[in-house]
Image (cartoon, rainbow, N blue to C red):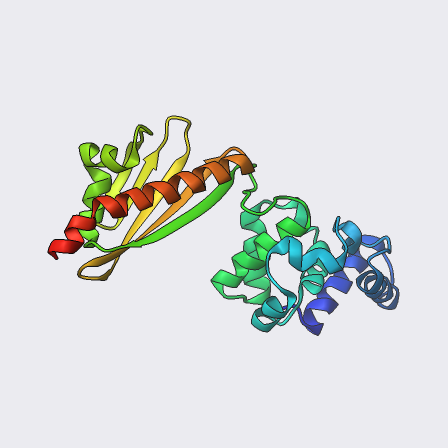
Length: 237
């Protein structure tokens, strides 16, 4: 997390860029953090600090509890190195290596920062495409559920006319499907007990938020159809 030591590093970075004394550089950075209206790098955020948590999709309380800093402090620290000009992997690497954040929180802070800076909206990736998730617990063995995805004839019974190509598969564990319009569907299968399995679906390469709604609705309905199809398996288990 950003600490006093980290702040001093930021001050020294400003000194190198502007030629200011340590005192002058520190004063300018502190003024920018307090008011968000100065001419320092910290003013690059397009939204007011009060909106940061909403844009990031995570409350100040949660991110501060996990990382030691709220969103305003994170934006200030990342703006100080112009992280908004970096690609996603570079921002994540900088946060992880500089502030020693756990892997999950590294991604949370990175994505939250990108949303605050207007680099992406909820569900959107840095390449402009969107992602969505769906999951459902089915009362059938994981191997049976996997087979319902793998077998083309069975798949048509619950998936309908929407045709997918299997790109890759790991038996009873993972499958990647691709739709005719290039939407990538990653399916994970996890046994919850011998007669119950969790199916987790991640949709990638969606073109718009409207596509997110359409595909989430589609998979909600199709997983319900799959549950109905596998109902006899439950009855004979």
